[in-house]
Length: 211
Image (cartoon, rainbow, N blue to C red; front, top):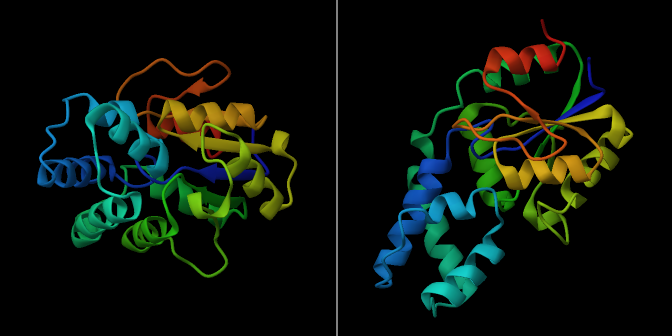
């Protein structure tokens, strides 16, 4: 079924950036004398920076102020962002949807600085593209607010929109927003209740009515 609008997550969905986010997080923590557990990145996948910081503060004794911590993390990220690549198949789907006139937006739990850098790297930073970042909403995913704002910007009813997400956090937000939600994780995983599991870019194309 062809959706009226498609709302894309960025990190891990359009761009293969999750390893860099993990490297930045680990580098900053180690510079502060904290050895993070091996499963830390899996625990924070798709979650906005402030809740991650609060968890690090509570569980690992992170004492650095939030603003100082996020600056260190983003400095590391921005130094390496130029090496990132699109997730295989994702940008091709994005461009095919654009070519046929389907409305699209990028909806991310990352700050605008990171979202815009990622968009430049994968070549989708065209004038007029709609974006919703963590800076634009009161509550980030898994709250539905980011996707509902995207629907408002696109002037479509949420029921006519489709969400593409790689994380449980993001997919849960899409479902909560009342949108058809395609869960396309980097590794096989059970989809959140109400979301549709997608195993490949080819399957994604089919769900978006491109085949």
